Length: 83
Image (tube, rainbow, N blue to C red; front, top):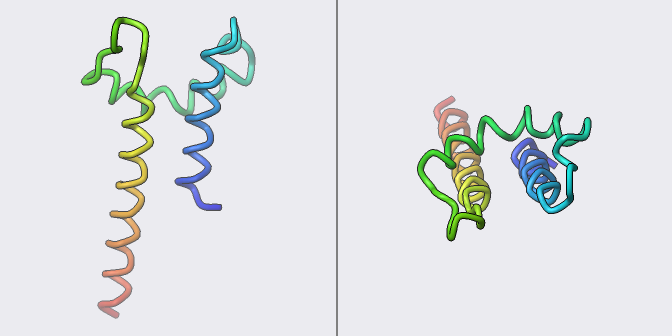
């Protein structure tokens, strides 16, 4: 399991906590919020909730995370190939 997968699971857990009343105010919810919210906040600035309630920014954030991870791996492989 790599860092990208771990962060992916943290995002999913944070989103699932939003379905439970007061779960984000719990200790685990607050800890996840401190780790995940800065990243999700970037996407929430540009993607408004659909119908005022449905927030699709975590979905876009997960796709972006995957593409970023693929890009980092490609750059590292390229740099390793130079040596």
